[in-house]
Length: 423
Image (cartoon, rainbow, N blue to C red):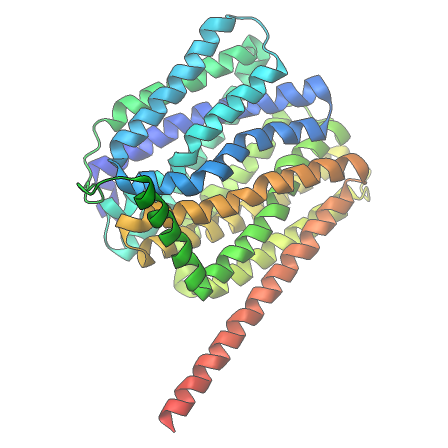
């Protein structure tokens, strides 16, 4: 990663703000996971809490993109963090140090899901506003992922400590303060507002801008195919990792709170390492080959987890740590898919329209997550733990094979066109 991106003060402020808010978010999410699983002992209810946070993101994100393209992106980011922080602090003041109900858990998850509908598309548009060179954009995306992962690494430890010693309400306060502090420092970001124009904003204009984003994705056959593969892969990936691995670890293997935190920590270490080496991987593999290789590795890793959870080992501890090893590989592979896809969109799409196009793409990807969480919440209730992981492995490997065939067909067609032109 070049020193030039580290000399950009606005980018450093953005990274610091995202680091602080991600620490707070993971403090809260870890506490929510422990609270819900301990209180209900149900993978299905745990999955519904995760889905509650994602549903508003899925429903609103496509429309948020147009707003992001219309408004001052820095001011929008600051405002959303202020609202999120203010909401959480208000809940803390309302409940004091008492216990909160499941209905409040669902309400907080839903409200923050609404706010986060804007977050990732905004950051995606800010990076190409700060950097123009493609190598700098790749490096900035990687560094952004690393910083977020570091925040997520600290968050689970703090979440376990705060939840164990001070209760669930204290974790809401920590997250609320993190949002407010992030909003404060983001006020000092200096960034172009070229996307903001004096053009009249109407319902008709909103509709046409929204449709424009859909048309772009639909007309780009390669982007459409990549997106479809990521959507399907995401469904089986997130269902198995966000519901399956925590549930199996806590209920089947009965790990401690500290070991439970290791689940999040290990995948974050994988994300950090994967982001660090992403530049080298992209030099050796083009984006098409990168998708095939990384998605194949993800499928093989799930196959390994299914074998381990089948019960072939007598030691619960060895089983747990082998699962963590495969989870590390999943983190490395999945982050390389994410970085490559984001960089490809940022380089190909005019930044004035990036908000609406990227938000639609991200919403379609996110839509697969609650579906996967719901399906796997049910699967882990009904089937032996190894079976849902086998299902993930089979479908994800099929996706890798299918995309590989798509690439080969396109290359054959391109060579045929060149040959005909030469003749």
